[in-house]
Length: 202
Image 1 (cartoon, rainbow, N blue to C red):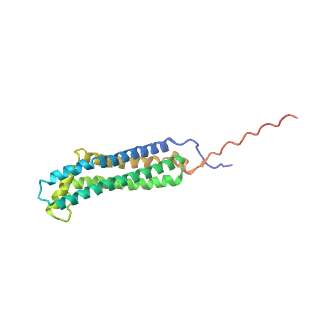
Image 2 (spheres, one colour; image 1 turned 45 degrees about the vertical axis):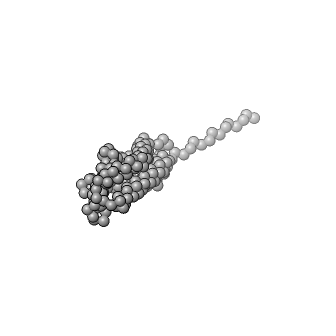
Image 3 (cartoon, rainbow, N blue to C red; image 1 turned 90 degrees about the vertical axis):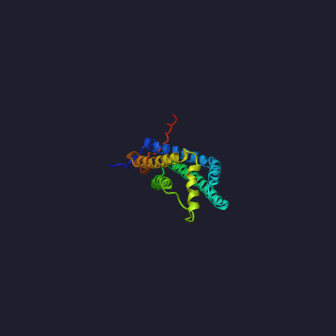
């Protein structure tokens, strides 16, 4: 007589490790969001100082400053929302929900793509800065933006993007091991039947 496969009651180490990696990524994302807002003020001041040595008009400088501020705030908000999404996935993974594993794989794929795009954007920005409106002055101003950030900002961003991509690859692989398949796909071991007390003596 065959019996249905019963998943182990204890959570597999691979699932726990995947959740730990995601938790580490959440901490990194929140730290990045806070750091982005902290360095914003100094970056704007440094940019204004450098732009003062150019022939740019005040309104052109203000336009780029607005772009810097909006980009920083949007980046911080998106990062926090992504961190909250990862927290929800962590809870689902630790609870053994199948939908959480599928959603995590989707997020890992998108996160890997975003990480690669971030690295490409950083490299492209350093190689050929964007031009606002196609003018020489605008191009010169945008070329000053990268130098206005702290010297460690761009290397740290590139490093975080690479670490993010690797983290998603590790999480996706951990959730695909056989032990994880049993945890998410099998039946939980049934609870032990209640012990029936012996009949009292007559």
